[in-house]
Image 1 (tube, rainbow, N blue to C red):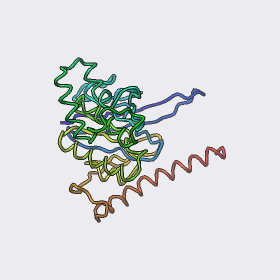
Image 2: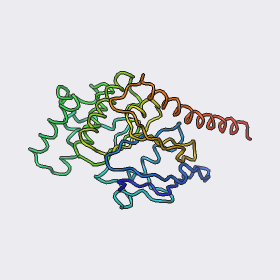
Image 3: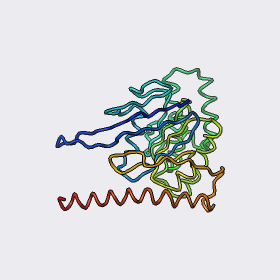
Image 4: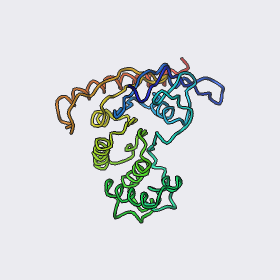
Amino acid sequence: MAQIEIDHVHKVFKTAEQQDVVALRDINFSIKEGEFICLLGPSGCGKSTLLNAIAGFSLPTEGDVRVHGNIIKEPGPDRGMVFQEYALFPWMTVEDNIVFGLRIRNEDPTKIEKTLTELLQKLKLTEFRSRFPKDLSGGMRQRVAIARVLALDPPIMLMDEPFGALDALTRRSLQDELVKIWSETKKTVVFVTHSMEEAIYLADRIVVMTYRPGTVKKDIAVNIPRPRNPTDTKFNDLKKELTELVMAEQNRFQEAQVRGSTGD
């Protein structure tokens, strides 16, 4: 049975000129419990818009997103969000950022300390627990952001290009950490990326989206055993297929830009 169902989802935005911009059109697919799904496509294809609909931050204009059969109407504790920009409280230390949600929920202090200790160890943050975000690298800040979501233990994690601003080595390290956490916790992960390699490295399935209006161009199962090697033949065959799919949409975007600039 599907955990998340995206049923004929359309999303239309009004511009300042009161013109309709169709961001999503007739999105239909489902996600099983414990799956790791990557949403892949060029900028402007609606990946983040769809993720925000699942999160409950921005509801569809038409259609529904359901979790266990219940229509999503607002954010909820069953869905945790990790953003690209970290969204940490700059006046709080690492440990205070991580357990902020637990304190808001008035959890038992013993449970809070146990959860904090486990997450500091899991995400290699123990020696940084008393530091402030300004004193951390981008990779460390993102570790804190992930730990803060994990502290609340939501069954679904939504991740909006969380490693997009990181250097290649830090990015790969955090990808490995995320796969390890996912394999241990069995959470459902919906991960937005524009990187073909990242999608193959992480996902059970890759949902490739078209340029605006965003639709599902192809839903691809990644049948490559973990841990995955980017130099493997199957890995690179799939990367080639994804590159062709995404670049076709990127070219369509560029053609639309040219037509717009010439008034055609």
